[in-house]
Each structure stands twice: as C-alpha cells, then as structure tokens.
Image (cartoon, rainbow, N blue to C red; front, side):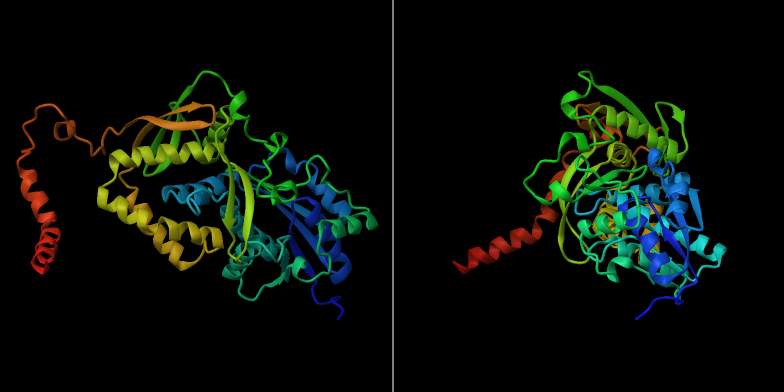
Length: 406
C-alpha cells in the first residue's frame, strides 16, 4: 500500500548518523512528505558540526538544532541523581534520561511547524522506541508516529549501507569505528559489532571521554563538591551551572580514567544487551551525593527512599519519565533532599573515585559526643541491654518453644 499523501510534514529526530540519514531520505521517498530535521544539543560537541548542511543535502526542508544542555542537566539529570538512580545497580541511565527531553523538544517543534507526524531512528528491538513514543503520546495523544525500522524491509547494517550508496548518502561508520554510539553531557555509550561478543574486551581506541586507568596520572587529585538540597552547585569552591558543573566533572573524571563500565543489561522489550559506557562526571557526582546524604539524611528516610530507587530507575530506563508514578515518586525524593546540604571531598586516582571527607555546616546529623569511642556524658551504655533484649524477644520466645518440643 502506497504511503504517498498520508503525511504532509514530519519532524525527524536527526543525529546525522547512518540510520537517521537514511530515514530522512526514506521519508521523502516513501511518504513524499516534507521533512524537518531536528537535533538536540545535549553536549555531543563536534558531533553536531555540519548537521544542518548535511540534513538539507539529504532532503530536509529545514534543520533545527536546539541547545538543551542546561535544561538536560537541571531538569533531567539532577532530579535523577537526587534519587541515586542506577539501573540494575550499574547503569547510570545516560541514554535513557536524554530521550524524554529529546522527545519533548521534538513535539514543540512539530507544533511550531504545523507537522502532522514525528519520526525517530530507534529500532524495533530496542528501548528507545518506547522512550520516544511514550513521551510523544504524553504531549499529543493523537500524533502520528513513523518508526521506519518497524516498516521497511532493511534489516541489517549492510542493507542500510547499500541504500545509502544508492542515494548518495555519506556513510559515517568505518571499519575502525563500526559500533554505534550515543553521547551527551552525562555519558557516551557503545553497542554493536565486536561488543556483541560478550567475551570480547572493548578496544582501547573506542573510548572517547576517558584515558585508560593505566595511563592516568600517577598522583591522585582531590575535588570538593558542594550540594544544596541534593543538587551539586560548586566544584572546588567555584559555583557553576548544572551543565557546566557536569562538564567540569567529566573533564576531571576523564583525566583519571574514571567512569568506564562494561555490562549486560535487560532491555524493556525482553532481551539482554551488552553496552559499554563512559560516565566520568556522573560517577563522581553520585559518589559525592551519597557522601553528603550520609551525614545529613535521617536513617529511616534514607532507607525508605532507597527501597524505591530500583523502581525509579526502571521507570527512567523503560521510558516512563512523564508518567504520574515517576512524578509522584520524585516529589517524595525531592522532599528527602531538603537537608542534603554540604560538601564532599573525593579522591580521584587511576579509575577510582572514593569519598575521603564530608561535612555539613547546618544539617549534619553526626554528633561526635554520641558516636565517640572515648568517654562521654550523653549516652548511658547500660541502656543498650534493655534495647537488645526487647529486639531479641521474638527470637528468645522461638528458642523457648523449640526447647519445649524436645
């Protein structure tokens, strides 16, 4: 069935990579529609160079590049880090947290342009299709979504490269760097090619944001990060905007080989997938945030929040950033952060970052008079006997019952 005439104008989330370059041309050819290209600047740096010219050369009527770095760090990364959200205990959600913002801005452009459809380059096997489209429907439940990977019969990189050659589209992949990658202020991810072998070590030349720990400086470096209500606000005494602060931590972490991780993750659609990630700044930020929490946060509040972190992380990973359950949970998390004010001192050295100090001038719950191993006048150690016996009561009763049965 012909697709011609079904769509008048579509806004495509466009990176300039192999997939979206082909999709742009395919939309023009298959749907006969006007295509508006859109790229979100989330801190990819030089990757955005030449995007408008390339998009127009491939058939786009126009190209929007939106600088979303500050919004990304302030309204997406930082709220997530208040929750210490790490998917399956290892993945810092760098790709996951970017998708709802990309989709939000894409829908804004679609409204401005009077477009009747939006399109993306996510495959039918991955998580991104879910993340993008749930966000689209949040903003416009009647929007037409075109997901080419679920429509066309090109089912391999080879088929895409053949289509590109046929239509004169430059192919950005190479034999040296054949994997796919996704970069923003929080991280860069790598998937595919050699990484599809779970036993194959990622080649050193693949890494972008960090030096290898073996080549990192032989002397450690200390960094002090200040927090207000759970958000980092300053590095080594210099107040920085969220995006600039994250960029600064990326620089420091990358220099010391921090933030590399190689993992197998469980995709929302059901399969396992291998990814290699670099998250230098995020790794430091999470360590520092936990340090300030440890001295300022009530024990039971912390334990309650921690019991919900896995669910929060899954919401982000699965694409439910705008869902009411995430919004409600964020309210609880933000309330828990009101006293998370203070400073953490972090030691960076050859791929490792660890807390070596923490302080809070006004919200510290640590009181040396109570915790000291030296003599004190505020804690009667004899009181612990009754505390222990009451907590052991159910175990004592069970022991008595067992003895009576013998």
